Length: 484
Image (cartoon, rainbow, N blue to C red; front, side, top):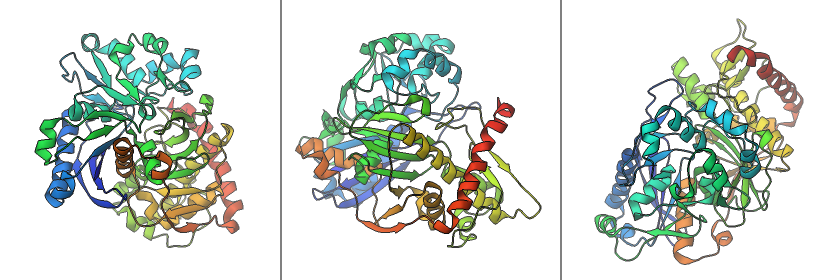
């Protein structure tokens, strides 16, 4: 058996698979986010350990014999978080999360240093790890002086699991300290934030062994024998391993809290000015590009809270048949935007409202706004040299056929639906645990799921969607000055 642990923002998911990659069971532990100030987003790493224990306990209660047979563990996690620990492994402050924007001034200052884009292949976004350390150095110097190690969230779980400081390429590529082409820490970039390689974890590939489960935890969980912990992956690269998006040109669209358009690359293709992320993949000698929007299902959930109707009820009001855009346009920039704007202070908007703008019209505009934001990502990836001919849809938002039809039509490419099953980050992490424990070939393990159906672009609405997208594209520059 093989165990995948996925540390998300809202919880930890534990998944067991067998040697044939059949899912045996899964369980969850819940997490909350602390927002002590506007733009801040934090979690206590002790809560990650508690949630992981809850998730594994849930598996043990239902599948004790299977859990006892675990031989490999893979880790996946929310990226970019700054987990700061001292020489005694004590956490110095709450972890500053991926969606925290307090360090936008520091990010802009680091991004102005041409070495960062040249070596990392990426803009220094406020959500990345390096600017958070620059913020801590400026505003919490006593804490900064005590930092012995900086760990990403899943790698703090690894420290708890194994006692070792180790990270891997896909997650570390989101710190702004990795030489992404060389797959190694950059001493120059670390020095630019007053840090050293000694304060970083050792790097391995995501498929490689990266520690062994501590005997105390193995005994607590009823596991006997040697258990390898894999390098693992950042959450999107782990989802790609679960989806089999590991070969050049394969792509998926994820409709979760945030939205992601992810494409695997056989070579390193940076184009930082497009705000496309160019990161290492979890597999050796493989990279990936992704565009990220900060509010996907988050936008629909916001609309749900405002209207008092569930997301399912709201999308249900639209029916099954895709409609032409109404003239009402929604910008889903509720917490700023990454690709393509790299704008932490822009905010969302409805444009074109009139007396006839019903709740259903607003819902349609919200879904289209997210679809057009993903279209922005597609155009950015194309400008960076990546062509996408079709995508597979994952995430909670993919339950809405209407939304997928809107995305297919906005992108102009077919959207494939995987057969029933959970192919997300926890499954990808379990696959990495299997590879690390057995030495299996990564490509033969990370195969794509069977496609249960395909949603084609609605050709009759292509022209109307192009007009609506042109209108959408014109709004951001028009309102940018109001937000800044």
